[in-house]
Length: 85
Image 1 (cartoon, rainbow, N blue to C red):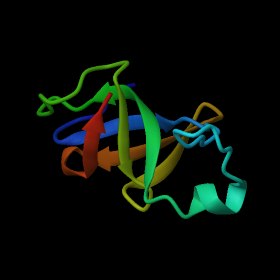
Image 2: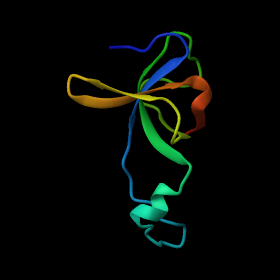
Image 3: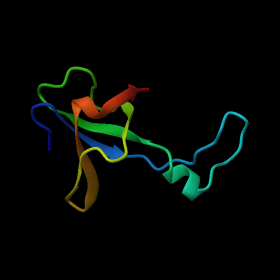
Image 4: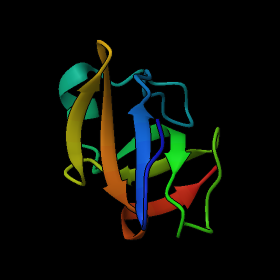
């Protein structure tokens, strides 16, 4: 399975949000954050900014969901990436 063109196949990573002071954010506070953490499963053939296995942050409303072989993934555009960790 591989993405094509400027698309990137990602898997969102569930994480607990902790502030710098160590305060654990609740689910509601966490939902208010604009960006979500994701792992790159497959970058498209025209994507040169990320590679397979990179961890990045994308806008939480970006892309579309897809289920392949029982696993949930999202397909985003390269322009939806805001930070590569």
